[in-house]
Image (cartoon, rainbow, N blue to C red; front, side):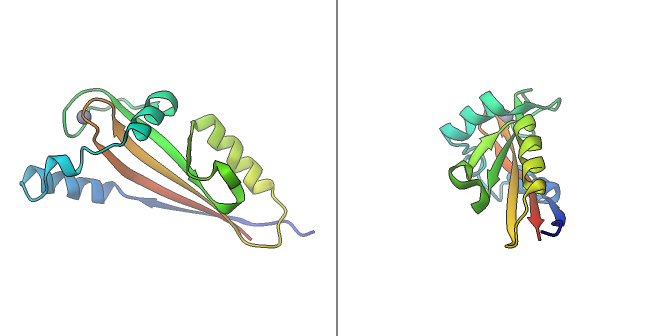
Length: 131
Ligand SMILES: [Zn+2]
């Protein structure tokens, strides 16, 4: 078996975040359309999320969390679930160590969530590909 090569692509969405917040400030987009975190997103942010030292861009409270979700066929039933930072690191190591002839992909979605007002936004989308 030959060694696999891992490629990593990170799509940063902070510009989109800034644009959406500006639209709300200008009244072009309703506040309710952005304060729509689901109960499961809030719960995962509370339990598995990483606290960040920043005020919520909408309500100004210090209740922001980053929550990370994993996706990929390789993950089986774990696909589409939230994980903490340590688990993600371990997953990436396991993924990189896979010996596979077929292409495999692992996506990590990082979502900013406010526990107070339910603001949520996909701030980063990372895709790891193994060939
Ligand atoms: Zn908030």
